[in-house]
Length: 258
Image (tube, rainbow, N blue to C red; front, side):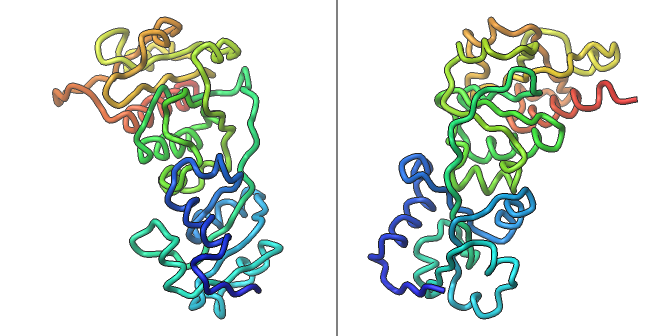
């Protein structure tokens, strides 16, 4: 165990950046997971952390599951741990992982495409839905929230570790997909529930989920095989993109069940 008490220590400075800067993981090559839920999700998926960091008050009673997870353990005074945390109530432990290397797009894997979805909470929620409903690949078009940012990680609740994630893509990169593209729309295409009645919703497929305000871009919508609307009997103009994604992905996942 290594005890660090200085806020000027290089590790402390890096942890502060990783915790508070949404794109620091790209520059530093590491990802910071704060809290036992995220750390446990990573271990369950076979992820090996490089480094575990503990608040001093937790270290003495931390279970061996945490203290033996990484080759290196560092302990910080509680006040210093609170300084690096971006949480209102610091979780008192976390893991440092190697940032994921760039992955190649998988042509035939059920996919969700994020078209400039910018809210970290929405992105994390969509990752959870994708994992829950068997869409094992998520592709992020440039302009989407950074997939491994702290806020997206927290909202994803561990879904990251069961998904094939590719970010920074251009629209033309989607040409490598060998799947029908299904676009959500507020004004064109059949209603989702009618496709379920006719059992005509394609699966596997790639769902296109668009920007919170602008929806799916015109250039991407032109590539869609199918446009789908979600009926809203209550009369709202549109749904939150994460809510729409959950509805659409669940429909796809269950449309061909016996």
